[in-house]
Every structure is written in C-alpha cells, then in structure tokens.
Length: 577
Ligand code: PEP
Ligand code: MG
Image (cartoon, rainbow, N blue to C red; front, side, top):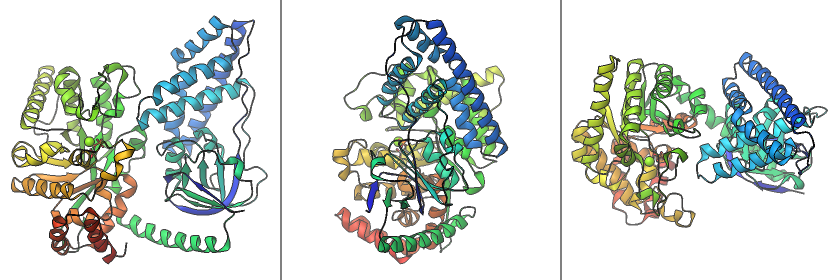
C-alpha cells in the first residue's frame, strides 16, 4: 500500500530507490546497581579507548579518501569522547550512586541535551546530537553491540536508508556507491546527516517523526529531497510523474552548476557579485572559493557558542586568517558578534528579557562590553594582512552607534600599534542595514561607511513588527511586503548617491522571484547559501535590469502584497523558471 512520509527538506535532489531499514541498536539503559565501581569505571575507560581508536581509523580513512568534512566530524566526536571533564562527571555518578556505566552515561547525556535544546539555536542543537551519538556509541562499545553493514545481503544499487537517526559513523559504514538517499525520523536541517548528504550530493529527509513501523525493507521509494517528501510503494502514475520531474531537475541543476564559476551579469550588462554566507565549522571546511565571488557574511557567533568561555583573540585570529587565506584574495566580510535575540551564551550571563529581539543584542552588547568587542576587532584586524578582509557591524539603528563602533575600532588599531602587530590601516568598514531606523537614516550613515549589507531576515521582522521566531504571526513575515521592498529601494538610492556599495545577505538574496527586482534596484551584491550560488547567478544572467525597472514601479505602487507577488512571479515566468 502506498505510504506518504513527510519531513524536513534536508538535502536536495530526487531519487527512486529501494528501502533499507536500519533499526537503532537496542541498548540496555535501565538502571542497574553495581557492587564494584572501580571495575565499572575501568570497563567504561577501556570502551572509550576502543571507541577513540575506531574514530582514529575513521579519521585516517576519511583523510585518505579526501573526505575532509567527514574527517572534521570524526574529530569533533573524538573531542567529545576524549572530554575527561564530561566523562569524569559520569564516573562520579557511577561512584556516588553505584549505578552501571550505561545508566550514568544516559543520565549525563539527557541532562546535557536538555541544556543545549533549551537554547533555540540550530548550532547547539546539532552539538547536542553529536553528544547523543558519542554517548550511544560508547555504550554500544561497552555492551559489545557491533554495527553490521546494513547493506550486506541486500541487492540493488540505489538503496535508501530509513532510520530513527543516523550518526555520521553509521553513514560512513554504508557503501556510498549504493547509497542513494536517507530518511530519518529525527534530526534537523543542520544535522550531520544532512551535511553529509549534501556533500555526497544525495537527497535527505529528516525529522519525519515515527514512520519506521509503516515501511518494510525492499519496498520501492521515491525520495524528494526538495520537498521533504517520500512515497513508499508508489503507484505507476506517481512513479512516472516523478521520473519526469527527476529528469527536469537534473537538467536544471546541470544548467545552474554551469553558472557557478562564472561572473553574474544581467542581459543588459549589469554585473552582480554573488557571494556566500558562512557561519559554522562545516561551512568553513566545505568552502569552495572558486564557486563564489567571495564571502558576503561571515557570521562569527559560532566561535562563541558551544564554548565555556569567551574565545581568545588568538583563537579567533587563527579562524579569520584561515578563512582569509582560503578565500584567495576574494572579499571576506566578517560580521562582528551578533549575539542576543534568539542566540544566547551561558557564560555571558545575559539578562532574561521579555522582548529579546528588541533588547540587549548585537552591536548594543558590543558597545557595552567593549573588552569583548575590542578582542574581536583586534583578531579581525590582524587577519586583514592575509586577504581582502572587511569589517561589518550588525543591528545599527543610529549614527551614534556607528561612530562609537568606529572609535572602538580605532582604539583596537592603536592597541595593535603598541604591540607592533601588522594590520591593514585602510580596512573597509560597513554596516548591516537591518532596522527601519538604519533604512531611514541610510543617506547619513552612507557618509561614514564603505558598504552596506541589507540583513533582510531582521529587516522584514522589524518592518512588519513580526517576531521571526513566532509561528503564529509568520503570515505577516512576508518577503513581498511592500514596505520592505520600498526600504531596499531607498537604501540602494541613498547608498549609490554616496558611492557606497550595497549588498543583501539575508535569505531574500537568493529568493528566485526577488532576484530580478534586486537587479533592477541596483543591488551590487547578493550573498547566498553556497548551494544556491549557481541558481542565483543563472537568474541574474537571464534578466534585463532595465526591463524589470519598468515592472518595479508598478510593483512598489501596489497596496496588496499578493498583487506584488503576482507581478514578481510573472517576471520569473518570463524566464521560464
Ligand atoms: C539578517 O538579519 O538578514 C542577517 C543576515 O542576519 P542574521 O540572520 O544572522 O540575523
Ligand atoms: Mg540579522
């Protein structure tokens, strides 16, 4: 019988394959009292050592195969497995409560997971998943449960794995030449399953909720990673329609891929720089400079998260330098710390606020905690000698904030002068335009910066007074909101009147129906997710900015959002997308 499974669109692509079910190892986690704590701890220690050794082998293997992203994941696992403080607390539990190691690991795991998940941050949620995986695998090791090759004895060369969850180690044990897709009950769109699937170029659907009981190994499945949907046991019609879509998607992807390395220029000769956004370790590792014009937004928050204390200047410097060098002379826009709002840091001891997005965040916090801010500024400045590094301040709402931030930048420069450290004295400085305050003042702000980058994620939120995290009011959070579109036009006009370069680094930079409008408004740069560079460049290349300018006037005069959206869709329709 046909079964439809819905989840989150983790990794794009469509495939027809055969179901392989991986059932989670049945771990014995129930509380068991013990009589010899030393023996239990010794057995935990030796399981950790064996697990570490096996991770070491996986690191070696991944390195030999040139799979740097897998390497980084196994190294992250090793770090957790070698964390004596984490496992020391587990040993304390065993000794104090005389409970078995599996139960102590489970308790500590659940406690840590709860802390990480209480913060609404995808990065920390992914880290919680890493800790879960390590705990599970160390327990497997202790209980002598070995993970068999799930493809052993299975025929077929396009196998789609269905599982509750997959650890990266699970995925490495799979024969990649036959692995065609992954569908998991758990996990978010930033989970390692997804990152690996993207790297392997296969579709993945995650977070489906319970579904393993509804499927059987060997069934045929259609996996649509773009829509986050799988159809098990499809009927003939569904299979045919799917095959047609797959062929069309393949053709389109080949066209988009072909555009990645070239400069994006509209049909009437307007160049648009297409940069990428980066903001985590995986993104850094997977960075392919030849497929973008630069990095338009380097979110630095990840350096501060998942840590027990502030990152040092040297630590930050090494990361910025690595990225500047990898970028091979292309621009690298480093955004200073944008914490607060939905992103919290335990060690910062931030106050509870009733309106965090209107509260103590981003540049406000940095102008208050000047020690933290200047540490970061010195680290960025030192990296300016290794590439085309630029500095960008987030969340500016008035001129005073910008001038104070620049004053602190000068202080940081003086401190480096005193230490005799090198940096580029002419480093370019820009701001994010992501508040209506900054939009309306952009003519004045433009006189004090080298570039603007429009943070449309926040600008839509503040323009429409709609909390971007609140599901109940998402219907108002609309990228075709006319006030928002008018804001971008105004910013472009003000920027260009003062010779200031203007980009967009929020998600709307890569929204197909908006790209023609951005070109018509004269946006100089679009900073998008790495996977969307090809599509963005393709759309830019298909349109004429002058032609869309005529439509733009009609669009911006619309009172209704749906009318504006229809006009935008019509433009997109003309390029058959
Ligand atoms: C934005 O607000 O558009 C942006 C790019 O910043 P963030 O999503 O990190 O707030
Ligand atoms: Mg923002």
